[in-house]
Length: 157
Image (tube, rainbow, N blue to C red):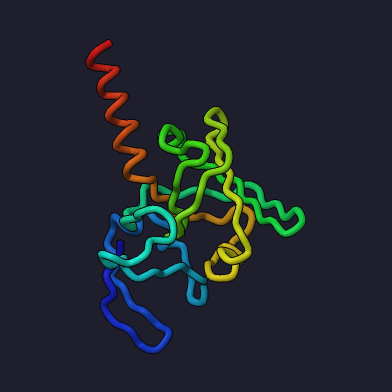
């Protein structure tokens, strides 16, 4: 997550530290690139998706873009170590957007998301094409459950 340090009209300023530049795609962005920025959730407000912290786990690469009649489908490749947390019908954060995972291929290290027209119109995904890098935030609840089960199985097998 980033803290706003200054706002000037449509410009928002943030401080980026080394870890942020190493773990996210922000270091490769250029002036004029579109990014998603969302305000922090407030207690009692409606959450349109799953809870997200803004803590980026890694970067994924868009390896396929399909646009069959009224649909927009992205297939992404990610570090194989993260695939245990990426489950069909589970949640994932991509460039700050809460999305539902449609399909996975653990052997290939890929997963698929389908974007609705509203998501395309209010996010940067319409501007991201083949080979684009996007930030990945693994769902913290999924990660906690998977890591707990793995730890239990390793220690009680």
